[in-house]
Length: 296
Image (tube, rainbow, N blue to C red; front, side, top):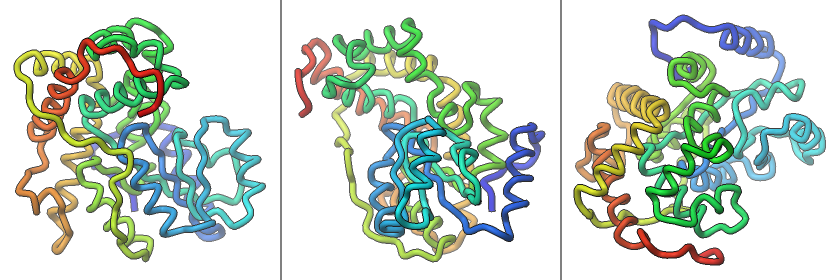
């Protein structure tokens, strides 16, 4: 089963992937590939995968396919799941692999604020030199410096498909992924994927997660709008995934929804409001502060 929306022309890369999957369908066991986009609740989901697959799970945080092929061939157990910071197409480095791709995406303001906090507190992070000022200056530097821009702008589109635009990324997300969900629907994502795999739904830990921050005011709204504008392709992807996943969930009777229990609707406006609250709190707490010298 694929995460798909009708009405889009399939590009050659999609067609090649579908042919490859069809040829392998009858002869090889499936391997789940979780594309962990940084700061999208992936640490919590990795924990679920460890519960489901144990030693048959491979953690791989690299885009280097040659290194992956070596790790695959050297894995002590048959690999039934791979999770990590890698991009789509990693399976092409090995033979005898029938991939099923899944991922999570996040509101761009929420993700950008979370990334900024993480980078400031991690001296060996590649973006740490760009995070020496406040959030607004971090945004400017990530847009102006080519290396920093490559690590931040349209990075969700890029991880999922290798493309930097929403229009180019969408067909591959539709046709090559079994399941993609917004981070706010993590419980539903785990439940549905567990049903497909015949795995139980365990308690989902909140790993590497920060609490929401209090609202500040119009300054935060203006900065949030600048982030949304700069990261428009990723935001369009996030909102598209959110709408489609909400439609899927509403069509499945009895699906558990953590947001519904809290009385929240799954809309871009709700997500934007929550993101602005986090942004406002960050501006209030660390706008003019110097970065810490170590992890905290």
